[in-house]
Length: 152
Length: 152
Image 1 (spheres, each protein chain N blue to C red):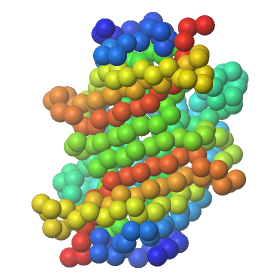
Image 2 (cartoon, chains in turn green, brown):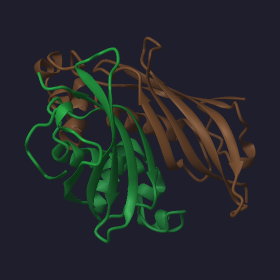
Image 3 (cartoon, rainbow over the protein chains, first blue to last red):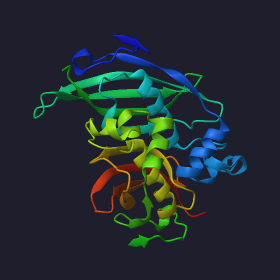
């Protein structure tokens, strides 16, 4: 089933493997990149255009942790789990840098659903969230283990 | 080798499996928790004490992405790679919530070093970074694939 920005709150019972969820778009600018970097990842290639040109990134690039934080922001509004998006763990890979000027969006797909053996009110849902830029290039793949609850 | 907050810049050639790096401490307060959540993870259990009490977290908890962002901040100063801490990917698990009042620190250990076959000037270093609170409880384990360069 495709869930294009649905607002209906979903319980574990409502989810099926293969379901997809498409987020809104986040426009990223150099100010946001530098502000996040200054607080959490103050490395020259995230802060200064000239230093970034001379680095592996060959131009100002967002911290990968900034890309994942924006992805979370987009997920909160596009994956409407009734009790919230609560992660137990995650795997991340960054395919290419995220740049000022990028417009990011996230498409999430449910990969698996595993009812808890010890806690019958919940299960673990594995969700793959691909973050892409305005050219459709993948910048990040996030695979999250999310705790989801049954309808009460 | 133990590297307790060393300032010497390290190249791939300087690293060995088993080397450890200890960070400074970051004091977390409710203001920081709410500020990060408002921008990147606006869910009630990260924003509002009463809503958090009624949630799985049973009290205000930092976004896991906030914990990882703080971890990165501590890593930038404690893992002094000459060309910066540049991640290709990572695995994260959150063992318990991070709370306002927590004082976080990170201990990193080099798990493996793999020279690149195609690019002789660099290698991939796998680093496990355990983030703990002031009671020594693990709040997060981050395993990162970091690109590291040889001395030029």
